[in-house]
Image 1 (tube, rainbow, N blue to C red):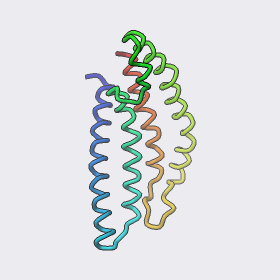
Image 2 (tube, rainbow, N blue to C red):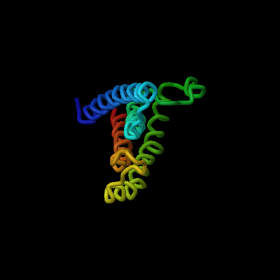
Image 3 (cartoon, rainbow, N blue to C red):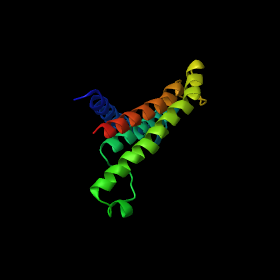
Length: 153
C-alpha cells in the first residue's frame, strides 16, 4: 500500500465518522429543541461544519471509487480505450488545474482567517471558522492526490 492509498483510506475513515457524529448531533439537537425547548447555536453550527467536511472530503472519495457524475449518454457509446484517454485528458486539463486554482485562490482567505482566529458572528457560536475554511485546502489537496493517483494507475 503506497502513500496515496493510505491517505485515501484515512480520509474515508474520517469522513465516515464525521457522518456518524453529524447524525447523532442532529438527533440530539432535534430532541433538545422539540422536547426540552433548548437550542444550542454551537450544535447547529457544528452540524453545518461536519456537513461541509463530509461534502468536501467525499468528493475525493467519489473520484477514487469512480462514482462521480458523468454524462453516461455519451460515454456508454465509446470504446474503453477512448474512455481512458478522455479520463486522462479530463484529469490533466480539468481536475488538476481546478485543484491548483482552488489552492492558490483560497490561500489569502485561509491565512487571513487564521491570523484573526475568525469565529462565528452568532452569540454562542463556534469560535473556529478558520478550521472550516482550512478544509478548503484539505479538499483541494485530497482531490489532487486522487487525481494524481488515477494518472499513475
